[in-house]
Image 1: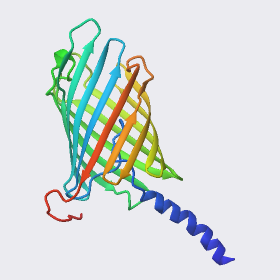
Image 2: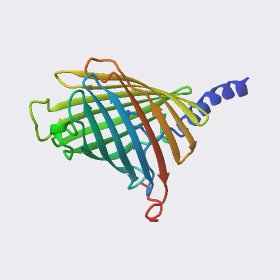
Image 3: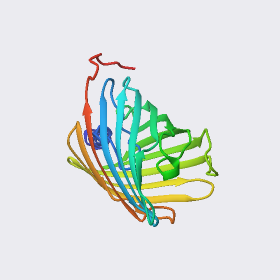
Length: 258
């Protein structure tokens, strides 16, 4: 009888442990993924976004890079190229605002049932504000991402506070970003649903984003998603697609454990 009780307790615990160690998607459509890069590991993502607003269409292609300095510290960078086509006006295109970030893995995924990392993003005003290709101001955005498993389902929460260091025009200096993602793994596939919001003291923009992710290998990922605008300031709809590739031992400096 004691053996049966012990087995009944052990099986759920082993399932929870196995779920914690599942390989989650490297990237999500909007929410910043809990997954970070190991030491000397480089991840590169090519992304495509299309959004249909009431007054214009926006297309963005972006190159994203994540590099693991150590098993806990990571450097990120994103360089977007944007196309803006306003209704009844001349279209414009060019480099948007470049972003760089640093992240620290506070609670790695394989240590506790809950994972947590924190970081800081710097937004550089490289885009042309006059043609809606950038915000025209320097921003700082501390953020965190938390993740946990509930049975076979993974939940991730990503929040950020973006503060404009330099101001441009009369736009609010503070922008609060909050994203939640629910993921259900099916072998090499993930069904995901995100809620993506951003609020200033003047308005709130919110999307519901269903998506499909395929990871044929641990180093390659494909993603497609369809954000649906909920609030008046959001786009009517959008399309997000990306391809992610991981490379190990980039500088051949070996494994650096913290």
